[in-house]
Amino acid sequence: MEQLLKRTKGDKIIWGVVIVLSMISLMAVYSSTGSLAYRMHKGHTEIYLIKQLGVLMAGLLIIYFAHKVNYVIYSKIAVFLFALSIPLLLYTLFFGTTLNEGSRWIELPYIHLTFQTSDMAKLGLFMFLARQLSRLQNDLDNFKRVAINIFLPLIVICGLIAMANLSTALMIGFSCCMLFFIGRIKVTHLLILATTGILLFGILFTVSKLTGFGRATTWEARIKNFASKDKDDVPYQVQQAKIAQANGGLTGVGPGNSTQRNFLPHPYSDFIYSIIIEEYGLAFGGLGMVFLYLLFLWRSIIIFRRCPFAFGAFLAVGLSFTLVFQAFLNMAVNVNLVPVTGLTLPLVSMGGSSIWFTCLAIGIILSVSRFVENTEGNDDEVVQEISEEQ
Image (cartoon, rainbow, N blue to C red):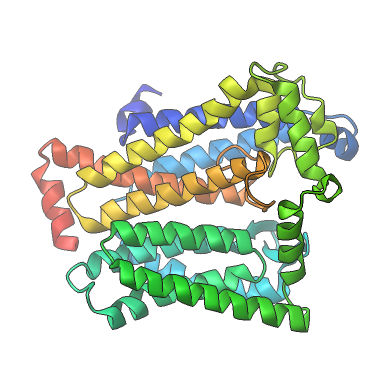
């Protein structure tokens, strides 16, 4: 263990946040899956706890091995992941497993492992855009080059994801726009991108309504229910989430004492934040989660500011921003600030492949952090190696 700790590099606070979120995940998942385990596994409530523990342990190993890799190698991997994402998203759209009226999952043959292709596409896209931004830093005034090399990949990936999972597509699009702004792309170019996105969404919505292919009806219903002042239009899961938060109050009812886990749909994934508030209270559970994600973002921004090379800087800030933004969207859904989406709480909600892709993103951020530490430690050989590969 001591040798492992010595070999572990990167921002120690980020490592700490990951460990704390993993521990919260274990406690929250174990508590919120009690009824599910009783129905599905005849009362063996520890099954999902053991499964989540295995997923998180594998995730920590992914972070460890990913952070040991020279982050420049991810520039080459980004091209492969981005290229692979397009056919996989197309396959998922037409042949994927249907969940909540949307095709979002594919199942790997023989091993029967399912995963969301949007998770891999999101990771590959941000890595690819960080690579493109770093290469075009001296040519960002050329709108044609920016549109072809940066905007077009974003539109393609978000367009394919939006047909089955609009919330994820919007989250990716907004996060990318923040990355573009940080990457010094002109505001006028960003406005053109935003206008194009709105027009394309309007076309997608119209085609979906006319043909019945897609989820336009679901999008429309969710927005109407969210905007409605009629209490009868409030979705059932939102009602139960509010009851859970009211039960918790400031201090909570205590670990394992949630009652709404028996009524709230998906209390172990989409609405796990409500269970955390119910059991640990708004002061510790609710605001504590916000603090942890903001702390993660703050440390990633420090890595961004200290990294001397554009690719590593954009990689760190881009991956961290999308992770934190997803967390805030999930929490906003739970407290009814935005319409219901299917986004999970990163590193906390019960999952498998989604947690592993999140861990891979964190490992890449820590890889950049490890390089920054070596640079500030005057490791001239490492700096020379990176600068040559850049």
